[in-house]
Image (cartoon, rainbow, N blue to C red; front, top):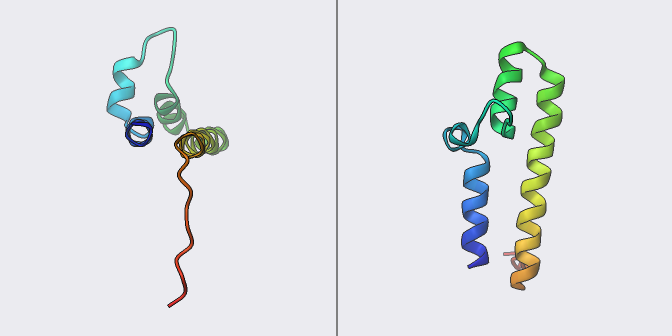
Length: 78
């Protein structure tokens, strides 16, 4: 169940069309904010927000893996 939630989270955080549904005049979701900054040409802010989005996604995936007890195993050299 945690793995399914993790796949859904990763797909949704990158999906702009789903974010547009959540967008209101009082709040902006991260993807919409990045798109607005792209239109205004603020590359520095886009880079920072993109790194924040990657960090959040990485933390959620790592937490899901830790909670589910799954560990990555190295493949033996061929």
